Length: 135
Image 1 (tube, one colour):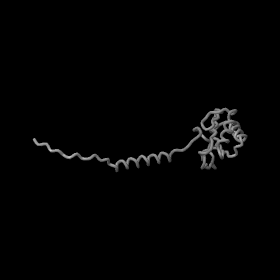
Image 2 (cartoon, rainbow, N blue to C red):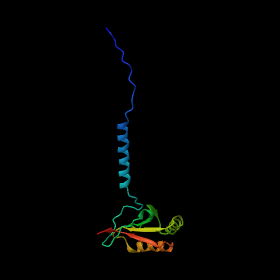
Image 3 (cartoon, rainbow, N blue to C red):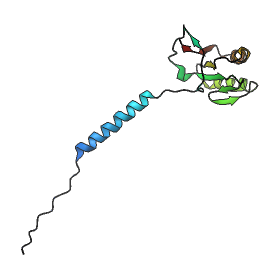
Image 4 (cartoon, rainbow, N blue to C red):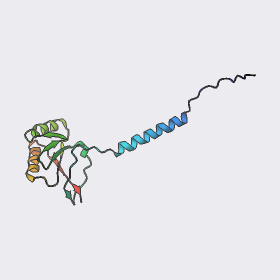
């Protein structure tokens, strides 16, 4: 019986499939990051308005959410109405151009919304928007 010895072939790393995988991962990352939206407030049922406009720099604004139960949230943090002035002053001191978006659930008691807006104005924040859904 005769045994033939073949010279050992050198192992190679195939680069083309590696590049394909890298580009696929890059494209997936880009698509996922583009589809992400920054939502600082809570998910609530907003009232609708026919003249609603989209705010371009909403991600730079603080969100003040008023629930039907009367609960108040400042950027997803539950706060009492008495604690709100301190939160707003802290936000105003930290932000270069402070903006607040007030989101109130559909059917919320109007006095709760007015109380929240009043505290925002007392804090000296003049750029205030009310969040609605377009009809």
